[in-house]
Image: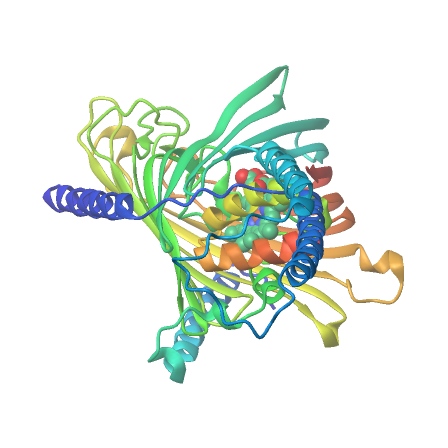
Length: 99
Length: 445
């Protein structure tokens, strides 16, 4: 079916555009957009960790590092993954309690 | 030209305002105490509390003995001299003071200073058997040095050692200092991974990349997007209701245009001594509408020129989509990635470069690992499929469009150690295909 290269490209391009539209639709349909709040306050540390730390690579278990090592690694990741201070702190608290 | 100056001006002003603002905020130093030490101090504290209670009891008992007539009205405070502490409690108080001093000294001794260091990084050993070349082993070693200086200042540095033909090549992957201006804005300067290129910034290290090689648009002299930038950047993330937005904008030296020879018309991204005053401005915004799904748009606008040529514009765009999630009914982890980038460089009208200089390329990849399966060995196996392609300008010296289909199988020993095997079906226009068998053993430490 996809023996011509341009077919593949069309499928990919259309797919990416649809994903964007779908994403923006989800945002638009969201009632809570009116109150711009820092969501992590309501989320548990383990949830903030599992939502933000598995999207690029598999997660190392909390006991892989000591508290002091997590301080450094999570600051590194906070910058790389564009996380906020609240998210950084919630993740650190969870990792330090669980290691 | 003028609009570019304006952009620099605005970015510069923003940075200055942000620095000035954040300088007014109080920097709270975190003095770290480990769990063990904390437990010990807690124990000591409990002991002290108990002793205090005991002492209190003793004091009350003593006071009761010395004042046996409760019916007596209290003497006016000015008239009565305050009673000296009963002789029996004196040594106890002395002992308490002594213990307090020891506990204080212990607490002081565990204060570790505010700078923390972590040596991490990755290493990989590989084997490639390409149809058109000889088969060969290869190895990389990339230590990463991280320093956290207080709450706001952070440095990351990574040299990359790579065996190439008969030599060991050393590259500075990054040397990047960052400063947290506030919750949502970080200022970075130095050499950093290209924020407008999702794959390179976030997925390229061998222990993260699910296949032994890198998609076509991001490697070699025909690459569309750079691996790194030398300059400064502003980046951060903002939660918006249940969604979140990440961003990074940079100003950098930007690339050079290769103007002669086999690779005329391609960009040289290793432009560390800028040959002109045309900087590059670029960035990426990533939008997370629901957890685990990220959609990104990246761009770069740069003035480029070869030696002695007039400057022309090079404009790059990229879009990416990423979905990674453990799915119950699929009994495992699904990892989907796609990125598409296109680049257009204006025609400077000179001989070697007198063609429509447009290139585009991308990849789409899906990986599945039955991490929730009951059978232990299955849990750690992962299947990967990737399609990648690169289209080059028809009239450029390097013009063989290429596409590849790659299937791979990985075994994960730990969350950051994998043995990968892959077969690549290659298709090049007007050139011999280069099918390949690839293996790689990679670990992040």
